[in-house]
Length: 164
Image (cartoon, rainbow, N blue to C red; front, side):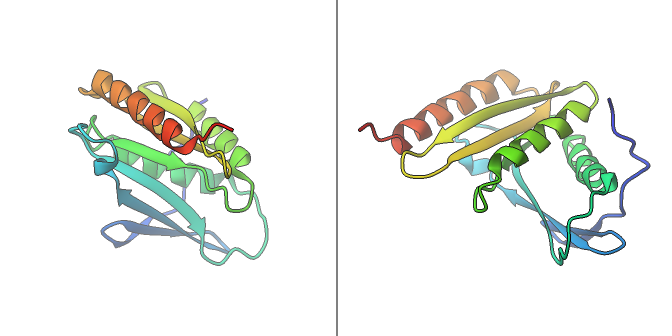
């Protein structure tokens, strides 16, 4: 099921990599961090996407919040087919599995035309880090991206995993 582009909040640019939108009771920030250098050899741009409520006082489900983040993500991906969006599920409050599930649900609401690469980065001394990378199916570097991403995750898992 595709999301309705008409039911999202207005997004305002605060700086080069910081954006905000307001609901009736809260303000949310969306940040983009240029993490292109995190995947050595990839010629396209990679942005790490983060978002959080600035003044969250209580839980209130509003589908327009999800739609706004999806709209923002889709608009960014449509700028250039070689752009990738990286998302790491925050584990500071032990809700990383919920975030992973939510991100998967959001991705499933995208229309055709996008690919999501998922992985788990295992740390023997801490949590599992869930990571996803989304890009266009028309990414001219898709094969290279897949190869570099797979190799990088294998390297990270070997560095972080310490056998007993």
